[in-house]
Image (tube, rainbow, N blue to C red; front, side, top):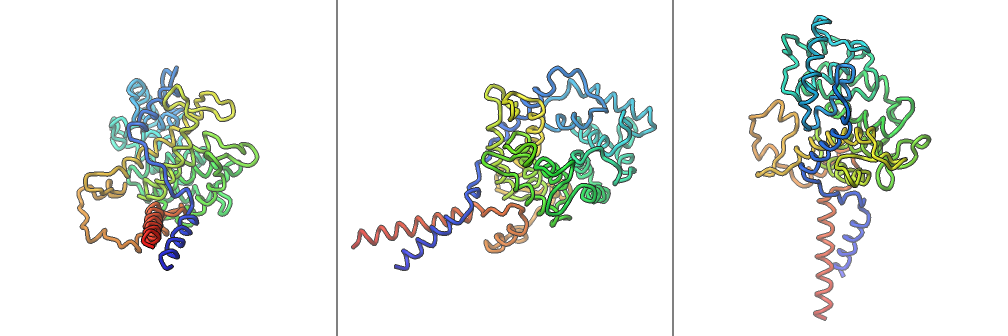
Length: 380
């Protein structure tokens, strides 16, 4: 009788666990890289060159891992000429902005150039000399600005930019106000704040709660008024948010969530062209949808690299990579009891779904108990 009760208890545990906990398997890095390359090829088709005025757009392509050599020379020449013209500052047609500096830093880094000494110019100094609360042009540009500052290790300035982003655009309980509230706004906001999420736990938790209001069967919708249907862009930006948070915070649950959203996003991929995504309304191949998908894939590729199993089954956080590349962590320092890990994970992750480990354990217990009951019946 006790065994039967144990079996039923285990079944109840499984039944009460969110189905989303059964995360999708992650694709191979090669699969995602091919999608990134296909996306870049599609969105850059017919483009002769890029310059400082479209640096934000170009930065998304430059960091993708795709070959940008046919565009880089002209872009870098334009940056050099602009620095010479403006005495070491970058001033596009739209003026001097944090977004331009952030984009150029990411592009130079991807091209193997040093932003602290680019033809004798210290672009980083000019970047961090700006007012961190200055108008960035769009709330969507902060993911690029803050990502670049994180790459540079300019944490103090970056936190001031994060503060400005929150003060200007975020409303607790409602989400990111950029001409209204939407999944897309929250996806961009979470991605921007992800490198410094540990400094803003309440805001991040609230933003994830907000973005989950837009989840539906097959992905995410934009908002109740304008895009009340599941679509490519909203799904891609929610995917970007979870991927970025997983990478910068070494959060496994968010990575599992990203895997699940990736499967949804791929249902919008063109059947004939890898990495090309469809406009959800017209069901045709679309550059804007493809670019949004690429932005998500760029963040996901970093998370895949982080969580890829190494020979000793260890993974380092981005902070470890940047600051402690040669430091060895002892086994004793990282040992955690199962109970401690469960508590720590529940505090750390914005995703409230139960862990796969817990579900698997419950399933194993249930199956074991069931087998025992069957054996007893046979004995009788």
